[in-house]
Image (tube, rainbow, N blue to C red; front, side, top):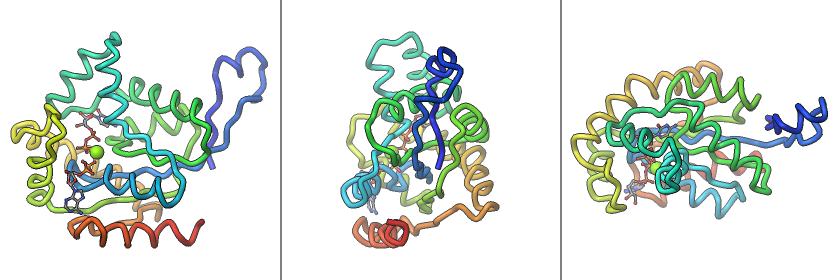
Length: 205
Ligand SMILES: Nc1ncnc2c1ncn2[C@@H]1O[C@H](COP(=O)(O)OP(=O)(O)O)[C@@H](O)[C@H]1O
Ligand SMILES: Nc1ccn([C@@H]2O[C@H](COP(=O)(O)OP(=O)(O)O)[C@@H](O)[C@H]2O)c(=O)n1
Ligand SMILES: [Mg+2]
């Protein structure tokens, strides 16, 4: 269990009155491995709230916020946005949504994300759901994703794969060294992947 503390409230009352105890599962894997697709299934069957870091960042661009242009440029390059930006968006959702269990999809994507989230929120994940899939398969899926995303082009896809190998896989290895990774063969068809996902969630429900 982790807690998200309202800093302002803590400041005002010198106490942790608005502590909210939450259960968090990180959903990690390469671009196109099927994170978003399986999160939708988990939401339906296990009552978690799905927080996609990428979706929150794209919404931030649309909102015209001061960080929008920076975020847009980094997404176009497949780069990882400064953690303080992404963590603030995640914290806001966790605080505002009346649920106590969250799937955080596509985060942490590098060591800075991982360490900063833990030190800022005090939350340690129950476990990490890792969707393992070959680059060839992920590339095929991204090129036919048709969600109008400007980062689903072959040049940016190549950059994202490089970032995934260099920065994101080490985070998965970190959690693996702590016995926290639940690895799923994500190359299989959607239904078969969900069968394996269901088995991971069922025992603890
Ligand atoms: N197991 C699967 N087999 C084939 N296609 C898949 C599978 N899972 C997801 N897809 C498709 O691949 C694309 C990427 O899936 P998505 O869930 O957006 O992945 P991610 O969030 O990891 O990038 C989508 O078009 C989705 O419909
Ligand atoms: N923790 C994160 C997650 C996403 N992002 C950015 O958002 C982009 C899209 O993330 P996403 O999770 O929606 O991408 P997919 O894995 O779903 O294809 C990433 O390539 C990064 O540029 C980030 O900077 N930090
Ligand atoms: Mg996704």
